[in-house]
Amino acid sequence: MADGASGADVGVVETRFAELFTAADPLRLDSGATLGPVTLAYETYGTLAPDRGNAVLICHALTGDAHVAGVHADTDKVGWWDDFVGPGRVFDTDKHFVVCSNVIAGCSGSTGPGSLNPATGRAYGLDFPMVTTGDMVRAQRALVAHLGIPRLRAVVGGSVGGMQALQWALDYPDVVGSCVVVASTTRLSAQNIAFNAVSRQAIMSDPDFHDGRYTEHDVVPHRGLATARMMAHITYLSEEGLQLKFGRSLQDRDRVSYGFDRDFAVESYLHHQGSKFVRRFDANTYLYLTKAMDYFDPFPDAATAARALAPVTSDFLVCSFSSDWRFDSSRSMELVEVLLRHDKHVAFQEFTTPLGHDAFLLDVPPYKATLKAFLDRRAEVP
Amino acid sequence: MSAAADPHAAPRELREDQCHVFALIPEGARVLDLGCGDGALLAALVERRGVRGHGVEIDDARILDCVRRGLSVVHEDIDEGLAVHPDKSCDYVILSQTLQATRHPKRLLHKMARVGHASVVSFPNFGHWRVRLSLLLRGRMPKSRALPYEWYDTPNIHLCTLADFDDLVRAEGFAVERRILLNGRGNPMRSSLFAGWRASAAIYLLRPTAP
Image 1 (cartoon, each protein chain N blue to C red):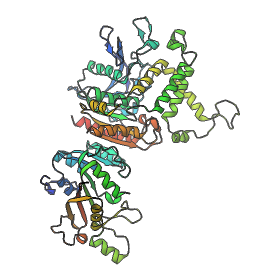
Image 2 (cartoon, one colour):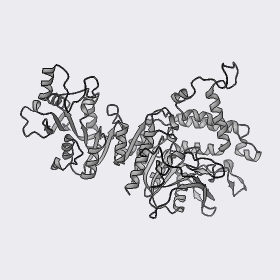
Image 3 (cartoon, each protein chain N blue to C red):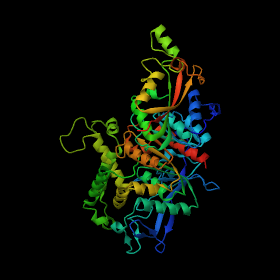
Image 4 (tube, one colour):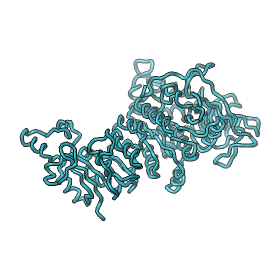
């Protein structure tokens, strides 16, 4: 269907791994440090066309991974954007060859602070070098080359993934056909950085953190990481969305406890989100990736923006959601403004929804329709 | 200004007034189309006249149409915004059949002058003899092909006559570089005699007079 609401699943998929840099030939990072070996975990869906011109790269958000769609045979785990990817869907695998990789510093198969540091024989922990959005994209560029893809039809990302997509368009203008930036921003505001700072503080002040060497103590800083997630999760939803979902309903009780139990359904929900998250995500990765977010600022001043955008030839689709207060529509408009100032081709749409920041992952039909139309059009126009 | 193209060369899917706007825009111009709708005019300009164009539209479904056409389009309320569009970033700012539906027409004309070097404005003439006659005889707000709405649900909140518009642009410091008057059948009028009565719609090409 035209709106991408139906379509078929991609079925059973598996995560694969590519060793892209070695100790002898390391990845050079923006900080000046080097990193090697570097492995990226990735998945692909659909078939690379004989002319290798139909690849679409998806960049995942803060806590995402390479498993965008389909199901893993061993765990039955379904991808985080499953209903967006498949034949006839937004990312139509009859048309596109879809690629997604776990970012460096990630914790889902790519080299990160949990990986073995060849210099010490122990996990990196906080010895892992600081990485930037530019570094993540540089590693992804190596993966794209490794897969034999000369040019990407589109690079697409929501939230932190949108920052990567924008970085792609700036750093590899010859490779990126179209750039899709959803629910994102060109820079974090003081409030955004403040939220990240509190998240990190929650993790680092957990007695089980052990300066990032918690695995060597057979513990995880689960209270800190869960608290970080609970707080962040509030920022992914809108006040209206939370109100609609929970209101003031009580959890498993008829009246308040006059104590510190989880009286309200929303409390219980957040606790559930926190403990679920701790089981799948690494605390150190959370520190590194939020820091990379904080540093992201490709257009710090007019002259830098002009330099960065001069070689950019891709067209852009920028999407925002009316109830997103993490990165509200004005943040997307800032991107649109700088793109228009440099005479770029840009389509911008704000979608009305109570779903908040999380809307970019969810079934918002007009959003899916626009995204699909933009990508399908790209499939028709070389 | 380069020679205007033949309006009959415009694609058939365009409205009559859009054909004349199409013909006004020279090859390769930079254009901003405010209230660009489904993007038919902008797409025609981009594809057939090599125009570098952007659109502004408020309606979700119409933006989807624009995206399908591969257009550069910003989801924006033209009454609120235009702030994302840089000063003098285009040659022509087009406002076709939209002026009468804006909350602040005067302010909008100045915003258009900030963004572009020239403005193309088309609007229905509320002074057309059918409108006048209708009001005179029926005593009710006129309805016509160009103005099909009931008074209580019309988007057209700032209707004006040719004379009203002439007064406004003169007072606000715009020169009328060209004016195309369309008769009741949508064809250009050869003479501007009694234009205020005879024109059912008009297309103005405006330029700010030197400050």
